[in-house]
Every structure is written in structure tokens, then in C-alpha cells.
Image (cartoon, rainbow, N blue to C red):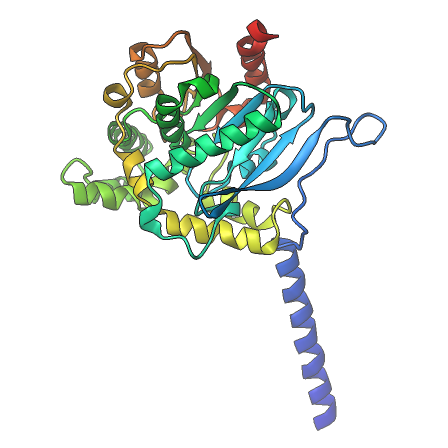
Length: 366
């Protein structure tokens, strides 16, 4: 009897281990971290296409980037992603855009984050100046590699701050700037978003969420503002109400965290480093600089053409402020493109509309 009972317990234990391992593999699938290739109608790798992960040594550290293109002869686009910490390529893998059809696209992962994460990096060294210098170095690399005198630059959210700062210092490096979810005045944006979300919860008689907002009167003090800005309340409300990362993303956990663990474009270690870098980035001076950036005052003019891509439902970087800045900024050429069904990531939310706008931007140079 003892032996039968022991055998039964062993079988139950082994079954539990197998189930646990299967669950881990489903949530966290193994991968060599290869970027998906482009194939033609015959199932062959498209001639002239690019799908690679590469690294550039800059001042003693390796900067990781992902470069994708259906045609390596296309104009080059350097994407300064949001965050920092969450790779912009992760959005590309979840919501395929048209960018690789129109450009040679470089998704840079900032120093200290994602593919560029290193435990040796000191948080205090991650300054605006450091990031701008990195962007310039990557731009030089891309221009030389693809034999293009100038390239295009796109900034998304946090990345729009970095892009603007880089353009101000290195205007001759770029043909034009695509400003997606432009950071214009983040403090004012947070006030507008706070009021809007609170009013929606009041209209729906969601007393629980209204009370949570009332417990964080963000205009009362800097301390209260910082508490709210870094709280789960802000992210929960934005995604619950469809004004966060995308219109259809209900939660950062189900919409970003779990997908990042399953993204086979990254190895296990790289996926872990995404979140190590994200955790470290909250202490980066560049992040604090971006939250206090006022484009109206610090960038009243831009020396190259600028094209705004704005989601009508964006309250992470408020749509109304993006349009106000568009009217305010001086530039050789400027245009405002509205995405009526998008929130914070219009290129990924409405890719076909983005394609039309991009073709219009590129037409004079074709």
C-alpha cells in the first residue's frame, strides 16, 4: 500500500511539473531571437530586404538596434521610440506597420534599456546629452552604411523629446522629422488628461475610480503630481478608457508585459533585460528632463520639415496640445496628420492611413 501511494504521489508530482513547464513555455517561449525575414510570393527571402539585430560601439558601450526593410534602397528612417525601456519594435511586432515597406527602418533601443541594457551602466549618466550624442552616432552609422547623405527621423512620445533635441543640434543630418505623439508640455498634458478621465468616470458613475482620482489632486503639489504620474492609477485609467498606448489596449499587463515575454524576436535574456532596463530607466535624468520639456518655449522653431502624426484619442501626450504646438512651431514645411481612430500610437493603430501620409511626405523626393 505504501509503495502504491508513493507511486501515485510521484505521478502527480511529475504531472504537475510537466504542466508547469508547458505553462512557462507558452508564456515565455524559447527563441534564438531572430528577426522575422521578408519573403516574396515564391516563398524566397525577398532580394534586397533586411531583417537584423545589430550593435554599434559608442563610447565604450554597445547600442542595440533592429533594422528592417523590404528594400534596402529605400530612404532610411531612425525611430526614437517611446518609454524609454519598452522597445518600439515590440509595438511593430504586435501591430505591424507600413514603415518597412517605405523605409529602411532602424529601431534603436536606448542606452541602458532593451538590447542596449548593461548592469554596468550608471543611471546618473543617462542624460539628455548622452542620448542625443547616441542618436547622432547612430545617424552617422546609418548614413554611411546605406550611402544616404541625410536620413529621416521619427520621434514617438518620449522619443519625440529626444528627436527634437537631436534635430536642434544636428539639423544637417536629417531630411525631415515625423513627430508621432509629440511631447509638447507634459505637465499640462497630464492636467488635461487627469480632468478628462475623471470626468468620464463621473459620467459613468464609477465612484471607486472618481475617489481614487480625488485622492491624487495633482495640481496641489509637485509631490502629489509625481505620485500620480508614477502610479498604476494613471496607466489603468488611460488604458481602461482607450486613451493610452492604443485604443484597443485594455491593460499594460495584458497588452505589453505578457506580449513582451512571448516576443520571439528577443531571446529569453533579452526579454528579461527589457524589464531590467525599464525598471532602471525611472532613475535616468533624461526621463525627468522629458517630463519637464516645454516645446513651446524650448523648441519654438525647427530647422527642418516636420510632420505631425496625432491620434485623436491620445491623452498620454494630449492631442489638443499637439495641434496647438503644430500651429505654434516655425518650420520650413509643416503639416498635421490626424488619425481619427487612434490614441497614442497612430502609425501602428491605423497603418493604411499612415501609409498614405508617408507616401505624400516622400513623394517630392521620389
